[in-house]
Image (cartoon, rainbow, N blue to C red; front, side, top):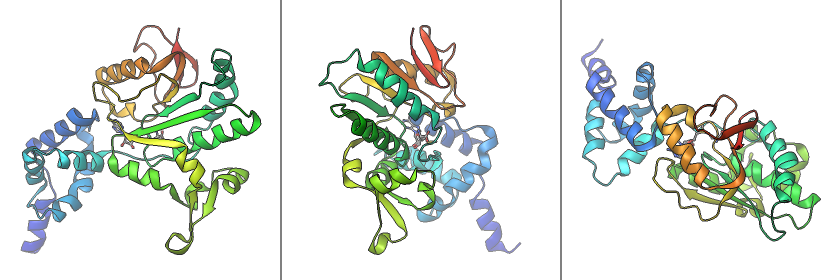
Length: 284
Ligand SMILES: C[S@@+](CC[C@H](N)C(=O)[O-])C[C@H]1O[C@@H](n2cnc3c(N)ncnc32)[C@H](O)[C@@H]1O
């Protein structure tokens, strides 16, 4: 190995202390636990940032993040370490259950003027809240007078910006039913050629806001009828999960529903929480 290659190899390893420091910052700020088996993943995700900042090693980056009193670099670190994987109609049964079963059920308890409030609380690049928005628009087409209010939030400002743009690859919309594509998307033109964009009305029907689920309070005014918190709590330890669920429940309508990912379970986490369908919970 050439001396330069050796130097580069040193730059992209992480010491035990460096690994502990970086993972504890991520955990403290976002709740995300990065396991010991994710050492290489951490290196791969931070490599580019180390080069961008012209630092000498990943350990050096740990010191850099700790010294940054503004907190901006912590956000960048967390952003680099989070998984933003999502998709339109991901875990699709949830959307049909919510709109075909739960909305009609709760509707009978609500006044006619009250909008049905839905919150996607780890919305990543927006596919989940936009799926909610499209299915809600369909429900409103079938039942004029039915109103929805859709809130979407994520810890990542970058993801919120991506989501607000509402611009997606043709591949990512392959799962969207053809009539939805026709009704709710437009083809990208000029520099957006080959992509498609949610129509303005759909984009504007979702309110995007940055919320860290670890914050003590969430700036959410009204009680929500359905809260989606899917595929994020898998990265939290059990105490964090419990605290987040308790806070989410404090923003949930008393007869509302909390929806988590197919592979997540809240059973036994909080007394008085009852599973009504796969990944869907309500207070008993
Ligand atoms: C795997 S994506 C899930 C997206 C979507 N809910 C789904 O199921 O397709 C997880 C998202 O959770 C966000 N996230 C991670 N920690 C968070 C926290 N403490 N507060 C809010 N969002 C967080 C990440 O930024 C990421 O966009």
